[in-house]
Image (tube, rainbow, N blue to C red):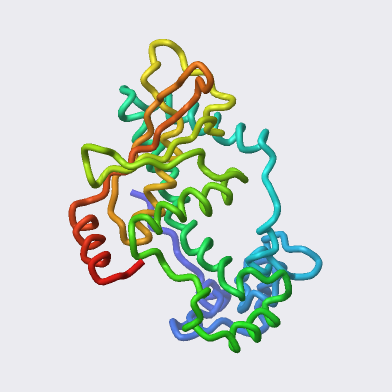
Length: 270
């Protein structure tokens, strides 16, 4: 059997000195770390990845009334509605599910429209100047003034807001008519002879019961819930020879809302 190799004494003298654990935790300042990725200490030390205009202002810096008188093109609105309908059509199995999806999508918009409508009815929101001038104007405005807008307290006030304020905000025109059911005290009907959602949508015969205006019904329902009037809003096709796309939006208020409205009427609240 061969003898084991002999290690010369010079091997131990030529070995690099070992490094202690403490020195590993605190690297030498002379170490070259230029190739290692580093994390900036603050956002000011590195360029932002978001695109911002040269003025360094975003949409949140604009006055809320800057776009109060601007209108979206009908073609852009038709494109958004058609793409939304095509998206939901691939994910539903029934007409009721289809309308429920459109309703829930419009509800998100309606829940935000009420505050915008009331704000633009105030002296601060109706002015076209800067926010600083509007703030100084509102500070001198008494909230006890009869013209100061408040949230609707009665059902009729809410319906008037929907037909004469919400509709012009969304479609640049008021609703065609407003009616109350003769059989059920808690049911009201908003009638639109030419809903914009139906203008560029052709419904196949197998989906003849579908009303794509359920999106508008969701907007109305969102405003009602935001104002404290719990209601269910549905869209129903009711075409005539003169108005083939005529749609009726049926509003069913909860019994508690009707009872509260009757109590306010007895107290003389308008």
